[in-house]
Length: 348
Image (cartoon, rainbow, N blue to C red; front, side):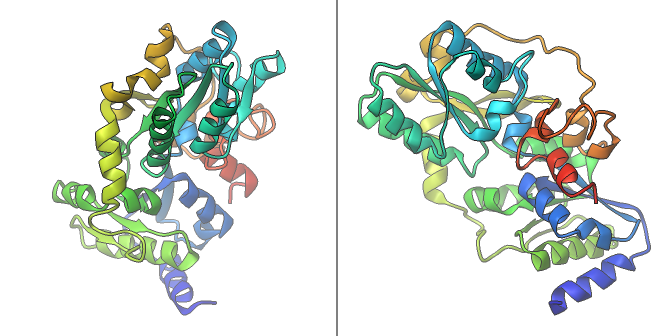
């Protein structure tokens, strides 16, 4: 066993002190923590909780309804990443309407959607543009390419979201954050340092066992001292500045709007839509999509999972009515979802 892993594991297992709650914001962190069995290495006084860092999980049912409407009422071809097809809307998923004859196709990158529109000029193509700061630049580059090609049959339906508002909203739910390394590679650490100045603690971490364990140990040590802290423990990837090119692209091509997060509610200025210069590629404006506001009541407790209030296994539907084969909630659908992680690794 790696010496760092061994030392961190021993100290975390033997920790005795105040009860600590540490939130891993990133869905990939959640899956790696589960896959590596890290929760089993922790003292009972250390609790790891999952946060809202899975873009598919926080995409609202109303967004799915708008995509369904575009497909069924406007005869658009919908292009999407695979996980999103199984996310429930109010009554149906995109996979359901595809089974009824709608044109719903899977793509592996945003640029693939541009290639599809170029090769299918007779179809009105809409790409479902979801994601956080990590994937947003790629989505925007696709729009930029479509503009260069004058693709009048191409547009995006945006559910692009940014993390700062979520950090602030979740601050009272956790003692410290494990910030997502790949998001911070784009944004840099300036915002996180500002949050630290306001008393919000956390560390940026990577995805290897030694990185995760040493980051959790760092949090435990610093929390025991009772003062706020911030540390970038992923410096091989994350810098203070982040990606200036990606940030400039986001700034030039989008504007901030309030955004609804599934199970959480509206977070102010946490969404992005295309700026006026690129508004002809905004499906909301192009097709005058009606409003879909009323969500059906459900026993699904995804919202509480995403805010760290409960573990997936605390939901009465988990592993029974809700499984990866027949998901009730988005957290069971996504490969980054907390519920799917707990299901895959038996809740360990």
